[in-house]
Amino acid sequence: AQKITQTQPGMFVQEKEAVTLDCTYDTSDPSYGLFWYKQPSSGEMIFLIYQGSYDQQNATEGRYSLNFQKARKSANLVISASQLGDSAMYFCAMRETYSSNTGKLIFGQGTTLQVKP
Amino acid sequence: EAGVVQSPRYKIIEKKQPVAFWCNPISGHNTLYWYRQNLGQGPELLIRYENEEAVDDSQLPKDRFSAERLKGVDSTLKIQPAELGDSAVYLCASSNRDRGFKNIQYFGAGTRLSVL
Image (tube, rainbow over all chains, first blue to last red; front, side):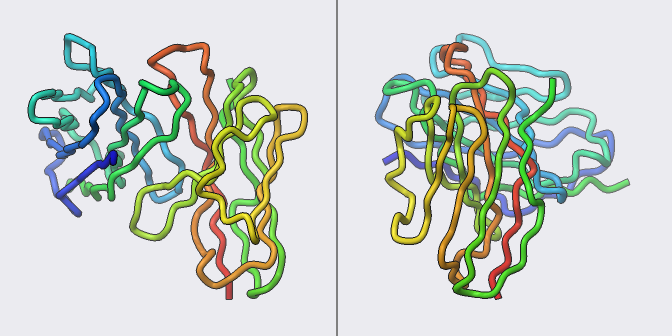
């Protein structure tokens, strides 16, 4: 069965520093997509970054980058130059693309990030 | 481009009462999802629509939950009767399957339900 594991319930980072949020996944399908979402206290899930299982390069979106290590089945999110507005819950999610590109997302438990001024 | 719109944002009801949530997806998005997020956990899919057809409702508790997506645009999720364990955030998402592998699900702000 597909599974996403986020082992860090909470993280602290100093403003302007970089932080890495861990995510490991388990799937038997060769084709899948990995996503990171941010959920501030307001509740909305905000899409941050996507990595496809066949993508040769690690995905980057502004201050967000994804450290994709396929053999280790890990997809860690790196946030550079942290800002106070980055304080939120972060979710790693996986979609099995083999069956459908509109399939459900499997989410991890989330990591709460707090940025200190 | 407007995002996914959900209403109401908050709802407090007594157990055994009915409740309904509404979702308006991003214009042009053919796929619509309803997820439930319990406190301290990630969202879990309840039902997925492709246009007006429910293609994955395996996680929907059909004895009390129902959903519809008339005309393949807006959707309504209903609970009748509500139980204490239904207290959660109900999230709606939409996506465009024509985007291929990089098909992103965009979420609304959710409806926070409290059942007393």
